[in-house]
Image 1 (cartoon, helix red, strand yellow):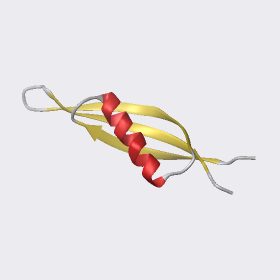
Image 2: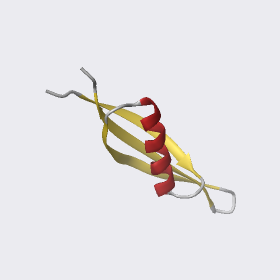
Image 3: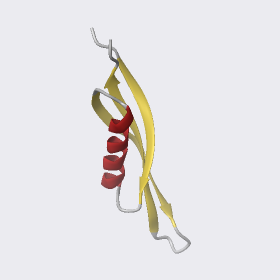
Image 4: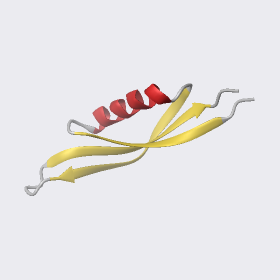
Length: 68
Protein backbone atom coordinates (compact mmCIF):
# COMPACT_ATOMS: atom_id res chain seq x y z
CA UNK A 1 0.00 0.00 0.00
CA UNK A 2 1.23 3.50 -0.81
CA UNK A 3 0.44 6.71 1.01
CA UNK A 4 0.60 9.99 -0.89
CA UNK A 5 0.84 13.55 0.33
CA UNK A 6 0.03 16.81 -1.44
CA UNK A 7 2.18 19.91 -1.06
CA UNK A 8 1.18 23.38 -2.26
CA UNK A 9 3.72 25.53 -4.09
CA UNK A 10 3.30 29.10 -5.30
CA UNK A 11 5.86 30.23 -7.86
CA UNK A 12 6.29 33.20 -10.18
CA UNK A 13 8.14 33.91 -13.40
CA UNK A 14 8.67 37.04 -15.48
CA UNK A 15 8.49 34.91 -18.67
CA UNK A 16 5.35 32.73 -18.77
CA UNK A 17 3.02 30.38 -16.94
CA UNK A 18 4.91 27.42 -18.44
CA UNK A 19 8.19 28.76 -17.07
CA UNK A 20 6.65 29.21 -13.62
CA UNK A 21 5.37 25.62 -13.67
CA UNK A 22 8.77 24.28 -14.76
CA UNK A 23 10.54 26.28 -12.04
CA UNK A 24 8.06 25.10 -9.41
CA UNK A 25 8.51 21.43 -10.27
CA UNK A 26 12.30 21.80 -10.37
CA UNK A 27 12.26 23.41 -6.93
CA UNK A 28 9.95 20.73 -5.50
CA UNK A 29 12.32 18.01 -6.75
CA UNK A 30 15.11 19.49 -4.62
CA UNK A 31 13.31 18.77 -1.34
CA UNK A 32 10.57 16.23 -2.11
CA UNK A 33 11.16 12.65 -3.21
CA UNK A 34 8.91 10.35 -5.21
CA UNK A 35 7.03 13.11 -7.07
CA UNK A 36 4.17 11.53 -8.99
CA UNK A 37 1.97 14.32 -10.32
CA UNK A 38 1.08 17.98 -10.11
CA UNK A 39 -1.79 20.17 -11.12
CA UNK A 40 -2.29 23.89 -11.49
CA UNK A 41 -4.74 25.07 -8.85
CA UNK A 42 -4.78 28.67 -10.11
CA UNK A 43 -3.02 31.16 -12.35
CA UNK A 44 -2.55 34.88 -11.81
CA UNK A 45 -0.76 37.73 -13.54
CA UNK A 46 0.60 40.96 -12.11
CA UNK A 47 0.37 44.14 -14.15
CA UNK A 48 2.34 47.37 -14.06
CA UNK A 49 0.82 50.88 -14.15
CA UNK A 50 0.48 50.68 -17.94
CA UNK A 51 -1.36 47.37 -17.88
CA UNK A 52 1.62 45.35 -19.08
CA UNK A 53 2.25 41.89 -17.63
CA UNK A 54 5.18 41.89 -15.21
CA UNK A 55 4.80 38.50 -13.55
CA UNK A 56 3.09 35.15 -14.09
CA UNK A 57 2.12 33.23 -10.95
CA UNK A 58 0.89 29.68 -10.53
CA UNK A 59 -0.33 27.80 -7.51
CA UNK A 60 0.68 24.15 -7.87
CA UNK A 61 -0.45 21.10 -5.95
CA UNK A 62 2.31 18.49 -6.05
CA UNK A 63 1.66 14.84 -5.14
CA UNK A 64 4.41 12.60 -3.82
CA UNK A 65 4.60 9.14 -2.27
CA UNK A 66 5.70 8.94 1.38
CA UNK A 67 8.54 6.51 2.07
CA UNK A 68 7.80 3.56 4.34
